[in-house]
Image (cartoon, rainbow, N blue to C red):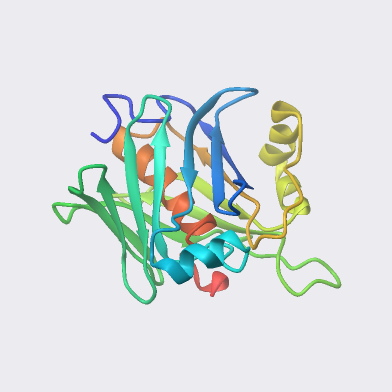
Length: 225
């Protein structure tokens, strides 16, 4: 297990991840399961060399490859190493391998022993481009468990309109009391919805994939390329 018996999200069925910024311009994420109920945070890495640190400081690096850190409220940390043209690596705080994500069509997230944890595929209504826009408000994906059954959805929100796609996100806007903050960044958040309670491994790695998508800017479906 990554974060105890129940994992980071426990039995929660919806987790919203809002992207923000620190004072040094590094991107952050705050994961919540309800009004004022945070369960984890994530932070963009600035530790990939002096040039990259300065790029983050001056706002030139709005996410991308690096070792980003997801931390639960209980202090459990998962390193998310987002890499160019290579699988994403997930490690514990002491560097022990936890899992990896091989991105493609489909993208497969496997545990350290090689067993499939879940697969990420495009949702049927995955990427609708609004009239007059070049890119969609959100990229929508389905999460398939090791048996091939859909156990959740993961939406990558690109603009304010993305929060209102689908009834469940309209509910979230009321539930969380706001529709996200306008930031000059490629992704403003993620919306994770489980169709059944996830296992600890599924839930924790789903959050780590949210970090890889929103801060690491890694494409998990072809529409995101």
